[in-house]
Length: 363
Image 1 (cartoon, rainbow, N blue to C red):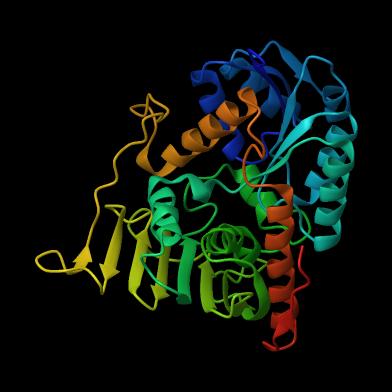
Image 2 (tube, rainbow, N blue to C red; image 1 turned 180 degrees about the horizontal axis):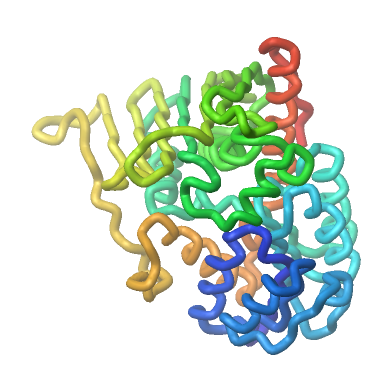
């Protein structure tokens, strides 16, 4: 078993690099060896904050280093493909921010590269790692809900700038090329991955996108889709970059089954699960709100982490543990990322055709 996970980080374009670097520095068995960023001031500042001595201007030099095991990519969405492919070809495991790419074609290149190099390609679907999502997975897998017949999801933000993301990040995320468009690809990636993980593959989608509240943007600020799962269940998902809510974000998921209902309130003021089990007996029949016990391996210390970002440390802790113990895959895979972007791309294609349903080719 390796004694240390040695990480090279490409780009601080996305603020999630900050969260994951913080997690890496707090977890035993890890070391950030080097940081690269095409914005030298931003990259050197990050290196100084996290005590990383090596700043490398060109990311191509970083991926070729012999003292790096894993490359973490947090660059602009459209730039992921070149960096992931190069890292894989250099024999490095890769951890890539979501969405993994801005097109199915690019995501396919990334999957091909990691599989041919026999390295792990991990998609950073952090929403799976909230405590509420982990418990929801256990409930669904237990069979308590019976046969899932329908899901409904809403996931959104007040906006990239409004929730406090750095101006340089907001600039590229609002760019239709660098970001890959707007709310549907950004927030939709989280929502789609969650329902795929919980319910199964999506095979058909009909979507509409619009810019309703932010005419200064060149991308969609809202998007809504209905879809069909491979198992025959139906679903719907809505996304937004222009909502008004107490903490500036919302992640709500409802799963309806033949025997029960599950509601996941992952970002409410008081996050929780609500479960209805039609087969439960009095006096506990009907709705319940189960207490979510911390995992025995919960990555502490949480005291320095705001509640709405706890799942980033849980995600990185899981990754490190699986890497050090060679438990593959190390997390959600780039094939999961490809499957997600296939739904996103089909949704945009449907929206361009006035909501005509589009088939999705399996990843």
